[in-house]
Image 1: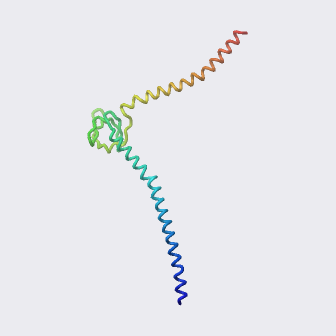
Image 2: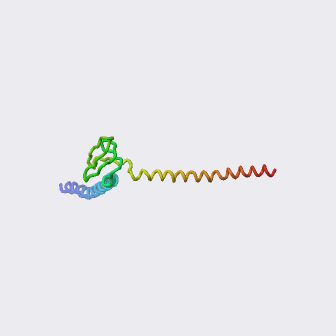
Image 3: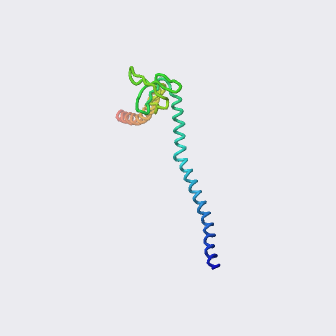
Length: 149
């Protein structure tokens, strides 16, 4: 009977050592899941929240905005916690700042893109001019050959 008890006790002793390793693996796996969860979900959400908070703090008169309900309008007045948006000629709606989903375009930024477009057009026209020069040179060379003959 003593041998039976010792035989039963032996697997329990090895089982306790095995369960410690198994428990450690479980904790490491759980920790990795938490780290992955943080980098894939929590951190990007905090970044979006920060950007939204900065956007809402930067709203000013003349900005074209879209509300969370999809209403488009121009900011007419900015108060501490609310924004008055002009939707139509005689229609003004007062929203909470948090009800603004996005700023479509800013009054000051509307002049900047046109200057950027002009710069891009100049960059495009410059390579075209470079490409045109070999053609002009070839035509001039042909004209010189005809004159010489």
